[in-house]
Amino acid sequence: MATVELRFSALPEHVRTARLVAAAVARRAGVDEAVLDEVRLAVGEACSRAVGLHQSSGITAPVKVALIEDEKQFSIEVGDEAPHAAPAERVAGGAAADADVEAEEDEMGLAVISGLVDDVEVTTGENGGLIRMSWPTAPPAAALA
Amino acid sequence: MDLSLSTRTVGDRTVVEVGGEIDVYTAPKLREQLVELVNDGNFHLVVDMEGVDFLDSTGLGVLVGGLKRVRAHEGSLRLVCNQERILKIFRITGLTKVFPIHTSVEEAVAATD
Image (cartoon, rainbow over all chains, first blue to last red; front, side, top):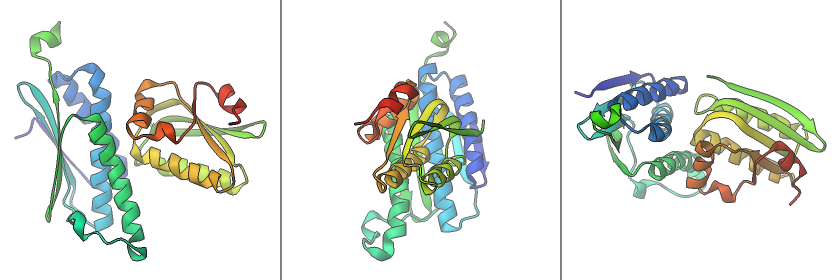
């Protein structure tokens, strides 16, 4: 199992908690202090996006965050349960204007994540999406130095 | 930490001093403040971000929304920010080309371009 797992109701006020927990676990795992701001921002973006997706799809299930400490890297997985339409299914035009605005905000969050994190993987399917992000960690000896 | 907002008038500019964290939870408060200012006829805004500890894409969206509103009245929205961690977010999203970003409130208030 993940080093630390977090589930929270899909409400904006809990995103800050997820950021704080993720940054604390990342620091403990040996992620460079200079990168912690990026971890905080990236996990916040991923969680905000998941909260938005759950709220707009009327999903009551919690958002899941897994913080995983491996030997040489620290990973964060943020999972949502919103059914994602394939890009080809998105319809342009007046009726879809609201959906377009939401898609735009959604993409802004993803743009920030991909600008911040080198190692990021976004998978989506009918049963939800997952954003997986990884950062290198310093070996324990170096972390103590 | 919550979001703090205070406004003051300097000449024909309205300075909005923002402090704390701008994220998916607090951004609506900033949006309300900007909408209210524009509705009250304040079209030249300076948003002072020096006290901001955290900014995410939701916050960026609100600032872009504010810019659209003031531009509809031939107004302006200038930012004051010297913090590298915050400036980085504007850079990676390309928004440094959209917002005039100043190093001090005095500079932003004096700017006319």
